Length: 69
Image 1 (spheres, rainbow, N blue to C red):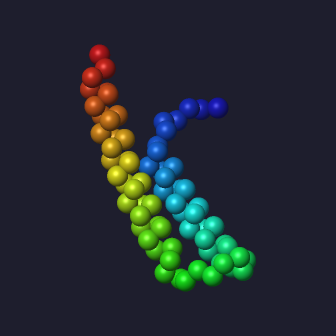
Image 2 (tube, rainbow, N blue to C red):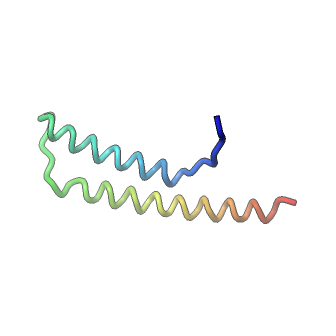
């Protein structure tokens, strides 16, 4: 199996989008009632958090690459 680098920003974005899907699926299945606008903060917050984590990860990797001999 080929190896690839771990991207935590993409993981966080995926988790928040899965959470949004679960919220809408629960509403569609009749388990709870969700207003249409309730998922907007979940998706927006998740994407902002993923962007911040991706930026920090990039800075850490760039710094480690420079420090390695």
